[in-house]
Length: 237
Image (cartoon, rainbow, N blue to C red; front, side, top):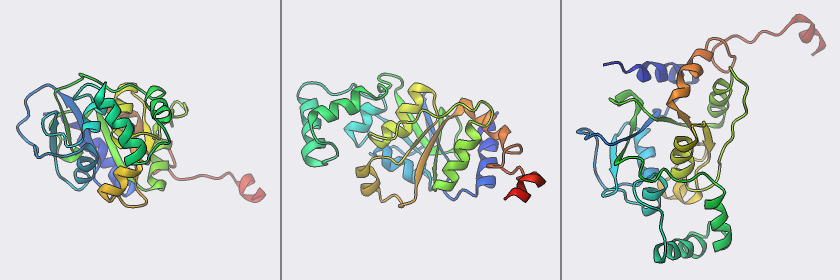
């Protein structure tokens, strides 16, 4: 079986000195035999996958209703369900000031991938049997900087990132829907509840961008290309 994604990601692990395992996220309708099916949230699954565990998340075992609809397993809430979420985010989690600011958070961001797939696989890339749709890197700021530099090395097009909103939205749904690499800190509740380290940043790479990123490694100083400073610049400095 051709599993080139394992070799490609291993290049980045080596060059960037990654400690957390890159996480494969795959949307599929196919039956899947391997992977845990415990009740788990997407923000928890990302953390544990970076430590080596694999999960199959469906509507029935998704532990977070927000994650279920952010990642397309269920329809977005309406009616009483929406009223509950409005109240919870403004009065419970206190992540946004009002139902108006909450509405803006949803309306001005990308839509969820509603109905995209029956299940989502979340696990380390090194154990992924299916081609990932995304590779999520849990990295420190320096490693994030290098990934971003490698990502736009060839075309120079600036990233259009979506930092805010739920971690499952910014790290999974947004790059899946838009096809854009994203960088996010996640949301404060997810970071606190899952005890993510203070220096962890999430970089989500649509897999179709992976080949160009890896090809940039030997040519870009953010990879392993040597930095060359012309003599006249050195003299000026």
